Structure formats: C-alpha cells, structure tokens
Length: 119
Image (cartoon, rainbow, N blue to C red):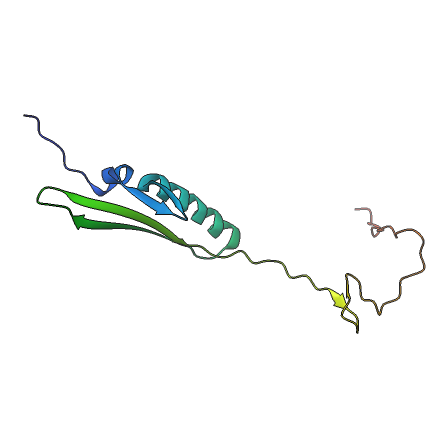
C-alpha cells in the first residue's frame, strides 16, 4: 500500500471552489485575479489595498470535511477629476463664464514660444 501525502493549504487551493465579485472558480484562480486587480489599483492610486482569503470548514461525517472558499478585496478607489462648470441666474450651464465677453479675434490665437538665447 502506497503512502498518501496529506494536503496542505497551497495544494488545497486549486481543489476548493470559491467566489470573488460574483465569479465562481477555484480559490487559486480567484486569488490570482484579486491579486492582479489589487496591485494595479494600488499602483495607480498610490493608496493601500487588502486581499483576504477565507476558507470555511464543516465536518460532514467521521471521515469527511467540507471546505468552501471566499476571496475579498478592499481596494483603493480611483479619484475622479472635478470639472468646474459655470451657470447663469436662470440655472443654465456653460463651459465658459457667461459673464466674460469673448475676445474679438476671428481665428484662434497661436501659442508663441519665448525666444531662447544662444548658449
């Protein structure tokens, strides 16, 4: 009779189904997905993130145990840009201040670079 190796936490991960953000897959796949998402979000926001793997155990009978898994993340939120929009007395919205008169140029002005002195 051959000796069987007991399962470890790592070898159990691909055998256990879990959920993450409504997706159901093996825990190892869900952890990979959550890990990648957390790293990207932390790098793009500069804030702290967190990934949690939960395994729940329940005794089925004298010889079996049931294991379920769950993966959760606490990810930093992206900061959205704020846009200022002008309004008039009637509540109409404008991109430019309606109180500011337009300059009398028929074509858009060109950006002129400052002269650079020779070195």
